[in-house]
Length: 374
Image 1 (cartoon, one colour):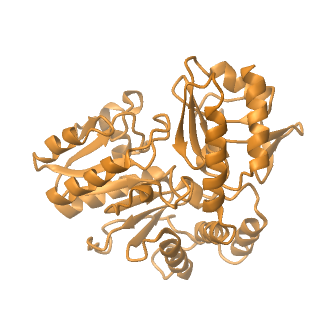
Image 2 (cartoon, helix red, strand yellow):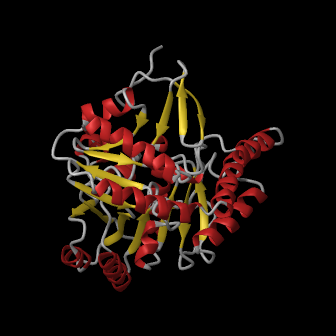
């Protein structure tokens, strides 16, 4: 049996990781500026993280959500404290797509409406409802094309007002920072106005922080730079540092009933052990502070490189846009300079490193990048 293709593959077999570095099966060392697609938040194989998972799996790996799970309660308490959303409730799932799927379903239960506003170049996942609010026709199958979604230009509050005035919009879903869309950050004023319009019309505001959350922007959630409090926040990726876990943070205004949402594996014991370790390490090692400092340094240095058309982002979620296709440039970075990076479209390189990235490692990357650009 052969593997079903997920992405075009680079011929590199990664077998080991530590901090911001990984090694292939030939012993070649790589600087990881991609973090496994924004998943590695506290670094590869952090000793406290591996200890927590090892200890948990030796005790109990899984039991169903039909019994009390004190680990879930502990993670919920810590997550509320670290994020500043202590008055919200949390529902644990396995992935970002599943989080968005349940957020949309919960919104529709709440107000009985069926239409959703999403934004151009958005990406919210590949499950049924999540893919329907993703602005990529190539991955929306005919069975998902139910006409529930209206796509609007990011930042255009007047077009939002016009749609919300119709009174049939269930929810507005927006990324804290667009990842796949090219590292595009919604303007703070736009987010404030968006929240006001949603509240005035009884529309649920969902902030997708799957990629931009868990400290990646320098605050726990990217929308916190605008000072807003959405109705539902979705989170995944960096929360588990590689172990699959996602969640919804749900406003106190919602009154869920037992069985309204459900999951078999969501919030299992191993996933909670991973998330608890991540949150503890983020707090104790002040990783959001490090993210701000190293991110600001890296963005400023990148802006001084003339061949880069534009540098966008916040913290350690950075996009470098070029006036040319970057496919070969990215290959040179990987195979000649041994640096992992991401991509958006044909001309944007994405940087999503672990939040422990140091100034010295950032300088090392800049040297390697300049050699490729030269």
